[in-house]
Length: 50
Image (cartoon, rainbow, N blue to C red; front, side, top):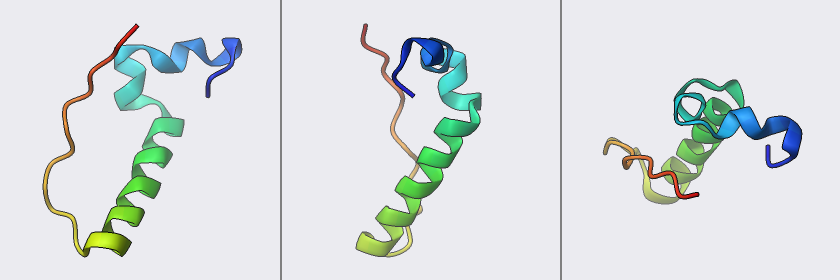
C-alpha cells in the first residue's frame, strides 16, 4: 500500500473507503480485542501528515 501505484489509497477519502484500509482496521481491532478485551471506544481521528 506504499508504492507509487497505490498513491490513491492515501487520500483523505480513501482512508475511510478503501478496502485495503478496511481490512487493516479489521485486523487492528482483532489485535486490540485479543490484547485488551472487547474494544468499545471510538477509533481516534485520522490525521494526515504530508
